[in-house]
Image (cartoon, rainbow over all chains, first blue to last red; front, side, top):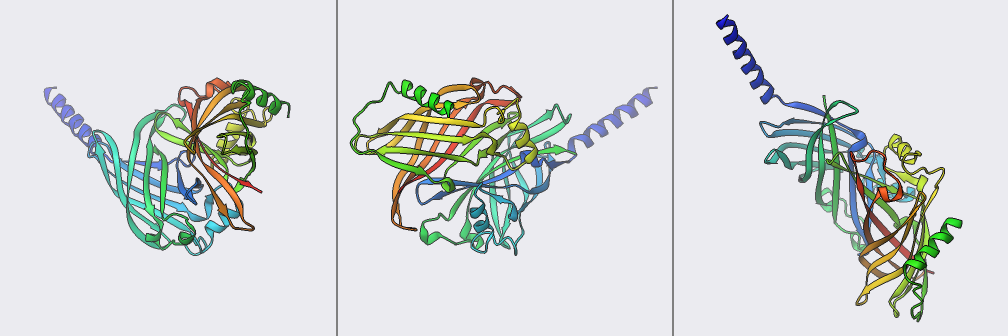
Length: 191
Length: 193
C-alpha cells in the first residue's frame, strides 16, 4: 500500500515535471493576427496598410521561458483600402509580389519580463533578403477563450524597419520614408 | 441628408455659434486616397484589433489668418474593413454598427483650435448609429504643401487622434471582453482646387 502510494507520488511528480517542461504549440488565429504598416506621407499624414493573409505557429514554454515563431505573410494580400495603391505596392517598385510571393518572420528567441513575453528576436525575410528584427511586446497575455474553451496567448508587438535594408528604395527621393513602423497583432490558440 | 443637417446644427450649437472673424476662408476637398479612418479596440485585454472605413468623403474650410475652420465628413459605415470578411459581417450586424439602418456616420466640426500657426485640435459632433456626441480630435503633423501633379495645387493634411466609449453610441455588444474604449486614428489630406 505504502509502496503503491510512493510509486503514485513518484509518477505524479514525474508527470508534473513533464507538464512544466512541456512546450505547447499555438496556431495563429487569422481573425486576430495582422501586420499593419505605417509610413509617413510627404511629412504630413500617415498612410496605413495591412496584410490580410498570413499563417503560422508559435511554440511557447512559459516555464522554461523560451519560444519559437514562424509566420508567413502573403505579399499579394497587401490592403490599404485603395485598389490603385495596392497594385502599386505589389509591383516591382515595392513588394514585387509576383517574384516574392511571401515575406517570412522566424524567431527563436523569446525574452521575458517576469512571466510575460517582452521581446521576440528573429529575422524578417522580404524581397529575398533576410535581416535581423526584434519585436517589442506589449500586453502579452494568455486567457481561456470562452467560445473556443481553449487557451489563447497573444498581444501587441511592434518594430521599425528600414525598407532599404531589403532593397526597397522606391520614392525615397520624393520624400517617402525609409523607416516603416510595423504594428503586429497576434493571438494564437493552443493545440 | 436629414441626419447631416441635424449633425451640422448640433455642431453649431456645440461651438456656440462660432460666428468668428472670417478673413479668407478657403475650401478644401478631401482626397480619398489619403484619407482614412482607422480604429483600434482591445480584445480580451490582450491584442489590439484594428479596422478601417474605406469610404470617407467630405470637405473642409480653413482660414489660416483668422485661425478658424470647419469640417464636414461622411463615413459609409458599411465600408468597414478588418481584413477578415466574417468579422466585417458581424461588425455590420444589428448588434454593432447596424449599417442597414444607419448607413452613414457624420463628423461635423466648427471649432478649430490653433497653437501659434499650427492646428492643435478640432472639436465637433460625431453622429454614429442614433447618437450624437461631442468629440475632440487632437491634430498631429498638420501641414500644407504644394503638389505639382497634375497641376500645382495646395494640399493640407495630417493625422488626427481621438478616443471614445462605444457604449455612448449604444454599441454595447461583447462588453467587457472587447473594450468599451475605441481609439480612432484619422489620416486626412485635402486639396484646394
